[in-house]
Length: 319
Image (cartoon, rainbow, N blue to C red; front, side, top):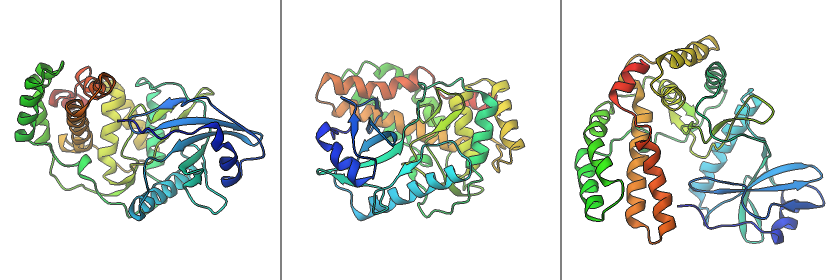
């Protein structure tokens, strides 16, 4: 569910002072962009325009350390030529600033277009190759979201509960469970190599800009992953089952020095695991929802997959 933390005009003086953003500023009346777990406000000052993102809840030492590392990775990516917004740290060089009791992060503003899976294929390959050559060695480790199966027993229990609660998508999920379980058989192989990666390269986070080119955002989930599997994720998201388009992305990636190589179906472990967990999470959130708006939002997680399902046949075509 989306965070309920908001930024208001009363926070502007604190933003200006904490992040050294100038003397005067104008904050958008509400969020100008909303994701699954957060919202963005726009702040315009005499020093430029900024994306302000509130941080939900209290940040403990572990969460802060993770945010510091993912931010450092984004800063390294920008330094090494990856098109991404510039992080604005506080006067004390911290990532999160407290402005009137609300923790926020600030980035330079980039005018981006909406999510689009038909971005220039060669540009996608080159950008990913550049990202995979960033000089950064992080310590944030592997995460089960990108590697572990949901499991046949869990899928069946979930399907039974969705049917009992009359979820509008229950029959569709039930019909797909054999394929989901079949895809999860591709999981479990040891990665061929590991390096700090973005791990969330869906169309929401890799977009075209209004001025041309691409922009990569939201490094919050960055951590260790196999670059070959992240390349496979890009193919799944931006090529679908179009083998010719996938080949253009792969060739551009290799020509630009990208280290990953897709050698077989098991290299699709990251997108398989992530998509299965996204579907599972959407189902569980629908079951836990207490309002119609929450149910609609949660169903959106599920519908995104149902409208464009990943299958073993699609993976074979991408190979």
